[in-house]
Image (tube, rainbow, N blue to C red; front, side, top):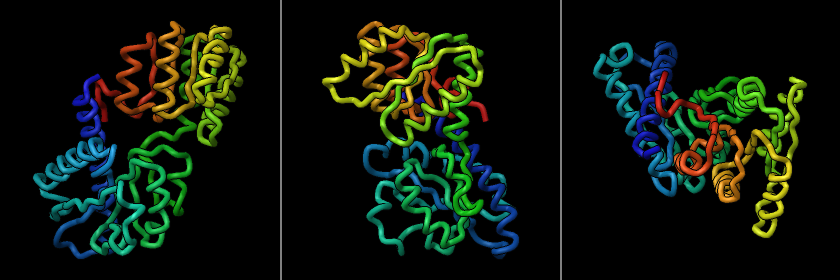
Length: 292
């Protein structure tokens, strides 16, 4: 998959969630603001650092949505304007300079990284700002801040249960192997997947730990080969998934690899498309046929 396809998908995705945000503004601003001047939306994505390219694409998509809304007359006759914040600099930025402290901003949209969302959460709660979170899928996002935060992507646990159901009912897998790291996030995905499979009583599921020291990778691969799985669920993040998937491919292990949004990065998708067949990859969107 080419990088420009990813960019187009991000643009379409952003159009959807930004217009949802604009619809929410219509109700809120009638009560709290006079019907004149700009409606300011705070948009937080990386503008520097390794994720800046994704951030740039996101900003272009958001601006397209704003331009379209303004061309149609704005929201109740008021034009919309974005105010940007570089997510890569949040942890070092004085609180006084954050968008959360800008009295003009009606809501916050964004956060590509879990750690910066967590860092900013207290400021949003204190300011009473609604926050639309289009990229993160943590189960606690939408319940934090007493209904103030709205996750727009399906939760990690819901994605994992859907994948388990597909592995059993859709792919008719009899032998399933789950590989996870020793982290709370990874173990949580693995446990959710195993529980969902066990509920069906039709498939055999085992788990393995991927600790990632280079000296242990050959041992892990031999163990994977010995189990002869029909389906492998990688409860790993993008970089770890690439490393293991490449090794499995080099060793001619034919298995179906399933993953949650943690694998939804262009480098992972490109590698899996080109080097492992067949592959089923769960994404928060259909990158070939973008659909609102």
